Structure formats: C-alpha cells, structure tokens
Image 1: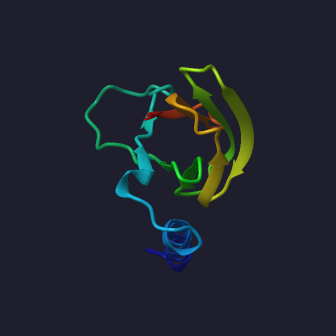
Image 2: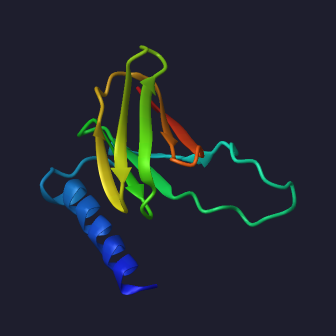
Length: 133
C-alpha cells in the first residue's frame, strides 16, 4: 500500500473515531447503520466469470447525528448524490467533487425507508437503502 493511500485510510479512521467516540457521547451499537452499496450493472460488459468488483463507496448512517457518512475509496470526480425517503417522499440531490475520504450528508432523520444513489461521471450507478424506525 503506498504512503498516500495509507495516509488517507488513517485520516478516515481518525475522523470516524472522533465522530463516534470523541466529540460526541458514546451511543448504543444501534446508533450506526451500515448501508450496503451495490452496483446496478449499468455499464454492461461480457457475461464471463469474474471476481467481484470493488465497490468504491462505503456508507454509514449515524442516527444520533442524522447524518450519512460516505467514504469514497478514491477520487471519483463529479458525482451526483440523490437521497430519497421512499416513505415520506422527501428528496434531496446534490453534485459533489467526490475526492477520496469521508463526506457527510445531513438528512432529516424522519422514519421511513431511504434510498441513496450515486451516479458517476461515466454513467455508472451505485445505490443503497436503509430504514429508520
């Protein structure tokens, strides 16, 4: 692992640790919901057998902060991020420069089923969903 990549992993770990244990009181284990991000296969390709592709996006919802923390494993460029509460219809969309590291997205925290979608500049789409009760 090169030094620059290692540095960013250490910084991301420190940020998550500070948010979880430092400046905010500790909460129960159910405070964080890991969001499973998947690729929609929008770019196609051949149907041969392959190793699973690396998903370059990781996300965690923190209920105590009503925030989704998104970790981009490397620079993805200008990414469109859509967050929708499928239960209430609340919707937000933004375009960010998705540099490597952790990016916070504040949401209302209202109950419901949420879907988060990332559209990369090349048209590739990643999405995930989670529920707040």
